[in-house]
Structures are given as C-alpha cells and as structure tokens.
Amino acid sequence: MVIGALLTMTFLFLYTIVRTPAQNLAFSCVISVCLNIYYGTLYAYTPEVLPSAHRGTGNAITVGCNRIMGIVAALIGTYADLSSSVPIYVCAAAFGVLALFSFLFPFEPRGKTST
Image (tube, rainbow, N blue to C red; front, side):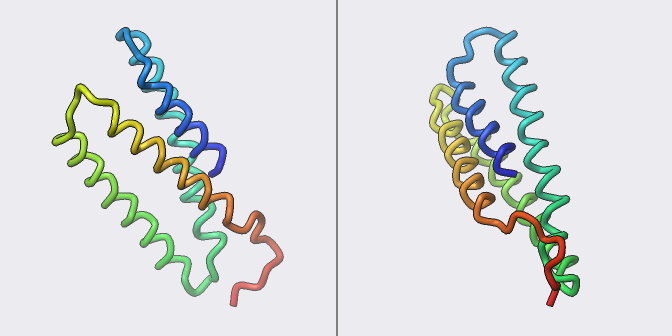
C-alpha cells in the first residue's frame, strides 16, 4: 500500500507539469495504475489484518469510506477552480498521508492470533 500511495502521490505532483494531450493521457494512465496498486492492496490486506469476528465490518467500513471520499472528490472537482493546481496538490498530499498511515500498519498478520 505504501508503494502504491507514494507512486500515486509522485505522479499527481508531476501531473501539474502536463502541457500536451499526449502527456495528459500518459499521466492519467500511470496515475490510474498506481492508484489501483493501492486499492488492490487495500482491499486484500484490510480483511487479513482484522480479527475474524470483525473482518466483514472492517471491510465494509473501508469500502464505505472509499465511496464517500469518491463523492467528495467529485464535488471538489465540480466546484474547484480549473485554472488552479491546488486540488491536485491537496490530493497528492492526501496520498502522502495515506502512505504514512499505511507504513504504520502491521506488516504480516500471518501467525498472529485473531482475538
């Protein structure tokens, strides 16, 4: 998750230098791939790290927060000033914070008791 979040953050910061449609397409594709690295790991890792009795609830909270923030992102994109790069910087910084939190998660849940 850390790698996906850091790569997404990096390419979002670099996205602000895009000047041509080809660059826009390339950066959008790379950001999408990096973002899916993060999401794929998040949805595979989250249920594994939680105790068995709470896996369904924890996964539902994760998915719910993701969907709510997707709505918030769409609202920000709708009402933001398109001539400014501030929303991209805010999103990139948010992925930096996600990388920090992801780094603090336990590395390997195997062999631990799920009490």
